[in-house]
Image (cartoon, rainbow, N blue to C red; front, side, top):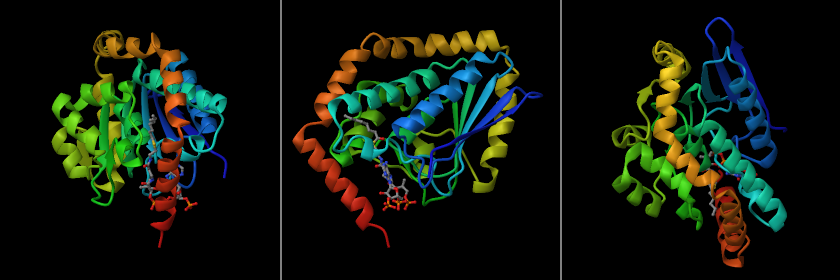
Amino acid sequence: SSPKIAVDFDQSTGVAVMRLESPPVNSLSLDFLTELCISVEKLEMDKSCRGLILTSSQPKVFSAGLDITEMYGKSPERCGEFWRAVQEMWLKLYGSSMVTIAAINGSSPAGGCLMSLTCDYRIMADNPRYSIGLNETQLGIVAPFWFKDTMTNTVGQRTTEVALQLGLLYNPSEALKIGLVDQLVPEDQVLATATQTMTKWLAIPDHARAITKSMMRKPTIDKLTSNREADIQHFVNFITKDSIQKSLGMYMAMLKKRRV
Ligand code: CO8
């Protein structure tokens, strides 16, 4: 099934709702990331669009993170192209001047968590079956510095230090407690709450809010923009190692076996 992004832009409110529609789990493939970047860029350039709500059309899952098959058995060139797209997604979302709200209506591991962390505010469905976090070490891989920075900027140094080493996935109430998400609501109210919260954020003059946002995030963004090529090289060298490929292979086999 082909990946899709459904964008619903309401001219009267200036708010766009972007639904991730890539069955079964919204994993971030190169195609999907490319489409996501194009959609965000279009909205960013449209001066009448002031707010963006990110959510999922898939039941139970916000996003399963990076598509593991994009990192397994692929050529170094292809891995590099994929990583550039991951960087681009983060740069576009973390650097967005729009108000961005994540309506997290399902599990959100690894790259899915990163995507939510780029937003200004996170509302998660209060369902104990869902989890969120940067679980990279559980796959035998290492979250890059800009994943780490985004998490540190949100929950602080100490919490990030423990969470990243153990590859912790948090249930919604734990995630709320450490500030990984800002609010929990019943599952059927996630989007409505995001819309209400958006109204509050949009009551602040755009220019003042956007400059403030940029002031907070620019040092973190500059760190990647000035190191993009080296970061790609680092990723390609790391991910194509035999030992890392073996870990990823085992993790994928575990994912499939886990099914009942
Ligand atoms: N990539 C590719 N395929 C996936 C992924 C993924 N990330 N996640 C799930 N799938 C596949 C499953 O293998 C399964 O395939 P199949 O139908 O062929 O068996 C199908 O999607 C459905 O998955 P589930 O049956 O597991 O669906 P559930 O609804 O039970 O669970 C979850 C959904 C919770 C999302 C679960 O699938 C899960 O935990 N997935 C793994 C998530 C994960 O660990 N992602 C990490 C990706 S790595 C990343 O994002 C950052 C990497 C940073 C790079 C660092 C490099 C140095």
